[in-house]
Length: 345
Image (cartoon, rainbow, N blue to C red; front, side):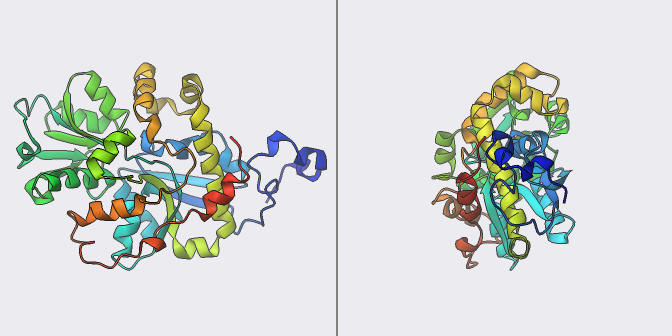
């Protein structure tokens, strides 16, 4: 593995430019420098810390060569990891619980979001007379992909109203222009999606928001507690085999989270790909203000988060109901704690 030549100099070792470097942290050699990460809807704010770590070269500073594959939804990203084509998933924490119910052990090791940021809204065109969640019975609800966090959130909201997923039709519409087009064309009656998609539709006056998890207060209202959202998770086998690589991934992500806490709108716009902006920079920045609070400030899993996630799934998902889920095997703060002791933005 090639290292910057100035690492050998003791004076350079004290410099700020080394923040993020494995050698600066005194880490052991990476077990593997090449890591494949699967994500479902990379343009969404839900996954923004991943994009920041990539675009600002925080992964490279750790000596990592990260290849990110973007799928239509989190459930498809999960399949990539289970199938072996990805080492790590940037996805919803709930998937670690669903996997354990099938005797597959994956563990979250750095949290990206402390609120799901998912918005459930109805179309003002096809559901102009909407009054309650019960009105969604028999309707088509767009989600990023069936089985993804968007469908999990929508299913939970339906369950609280006495409906099940069988009472509606979930339609995969992706996480960008496709989702917007599906709503505007009347292909779907409601949409569970994230920003900037939802803010764009809301500002255009095309949707009515019926459930929102973009802030901590709204998240507590919907789920009854802290609901962990986007995270990096990997199989326990990968983590056991590659602890130093896992630590370096965590270092880069924690650094990205810290950067986001103080980044200006201009810095953010200049960092993300142009395609993320949906042709409207002002909209993107407006959306960012809606979800900024939802970003984890440090990457730590809140103590009550895993239990809230399990309770949510148990409300409607037959895969988890009645299964003995060991929450302690689905997450760890160990890597984040080590990163916080060394990483600076």
